[in-house]
Amino acid sequence: MKLVRYGAAGAERPGMIDGTGVLRDLAAHIPEIGPAMLGPDNLARLRDLDPSRLPRVDGAPRLGPPLSGIGKIIGIGLNYADHAAEAGLDPPKEPIVFLKATTALSGPNDPIVIPRGSAKTDWEAELALVIGTPARYVERADALAHIAGYLVCNDVSERNFQLERGGQWTKGKSSDSFAPLGPWLVSAEEIPDPQALDLWLDLNGEPMQRGNTRTMIFGVVELVSYVSQFMTLMPGDVITTGTPPGVGSARKPPRYLRGGDVLKLGVAGLGEQRQEVKEWRAG
Image 1 (cartoon, rainbow, N blue to C red):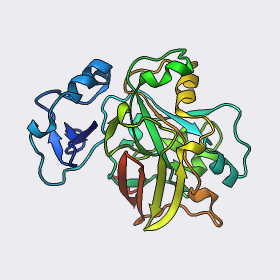
Image 2: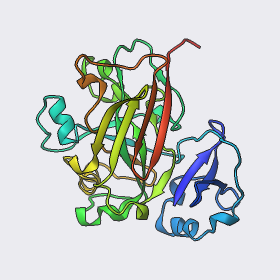
Image 3: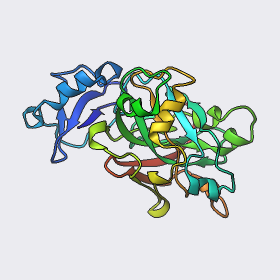
């Protein structure tokens, strides 16, 4: 099941993608796709709907983040063995955890805006997961039961803010437009093995990132269990699980985003994103 939110920013409607790729409207059945809809019973009710009987949405409306009411965006750093190798860093002994501000959220095809004062805005194609039921002190054997679904995230990062300005990574991860999510939320039963997914990202048509979730240092099960030891995970919380090799900061010489660039990225089974890059302008 693929759930979407479509329409102008701030006025999105709930939708579903049917088996032929057609967008269908869900507004007669649910008011919004948010945390309250992510429990197993509610997802089962949506799964039982016949998509062919839902109103067809014609045209190509804007897609927003496929989930509203996200409480936390939790990032995991340096979580692919091949990405750690390209960065010349030892693999971490425990997951590196940071937060992204929810004001960074944007739709999968909305522009990325390079923030004021940025010199090193970078890309990171990632698998993200969405929590469906409250999780605290979760054992690894129970972790998958707390996941409502998966989606694509571009964990856009300003490396100067992140690594050269002191303090924590959050300020390099949280500028407006730095968390494009979607195009849709894919329910967990459609992804039986989250550790076997290809990821990719192209910049202006040139391949940059190619990877697979099997090279994660800490897999999805371990991440949900680990993070839940330090904070309660609530329905609608997002964990974005790290990026494979090919980021701009690791290239020789480094390559960072500039106005006019176009990014395309995706995760197998979860759809694709496309973002045009714009320079920040006052007002």
